[in-house]
Image (cartoon, rainbow, N blue to C red; front, side, top):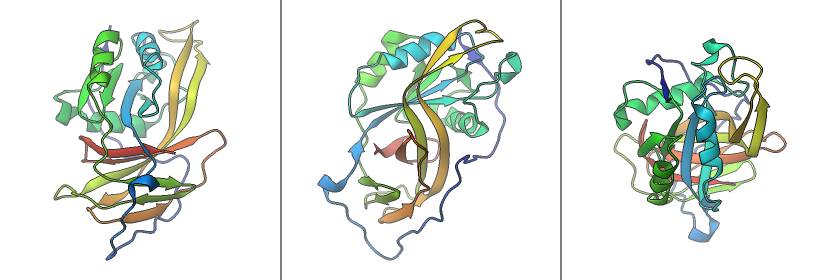
Length: 241
């Protein structure tokens, strides 16, 4: 069954470090459509190796139709580490991201397995039909052009919320990582985890004018995604390299 946890707070962290961001101010940065990186629908799976409810959800996300405009991301939360197995991919920053969604999605606490699509809709991830329907009804948000060229990220102009939008830099390992679980509720099983997120960093606030920043070099085998998002709410635009 679905497992839930009452809320707490922690600060976002970035395990990889971040180069100094260089923002363009007083200047309009317009990106031609053909220069933008591929826009994507973001499917965020909040999972835990220590929770017995998550294996079906991991498989359901893995079984989503493979499309270039669909980006599943697995965020491994930490609040089930107390059950006897510490998630090998877990980070407090990922738990915080899930908790930041609670108010906007009408939740009173985080739970696993939860899937959030474009920051707008959520579902229990082990319900395959509901997950497929939710993803099928979503379209890639593309209100803002994003270009990822090496370690340089450019975000174009557009209509921003009055308070601005958060810009997130995400690093993840494409494909499936398999973990042998030696203890806890999933002891004796091997759990596949799709597109494991290795780091997330809030790199600034987008105010509707063009901006640019330099990201740290990625580790071998990692990819980069950039998300422009109302704080704790809908994703306005997202792209991956």
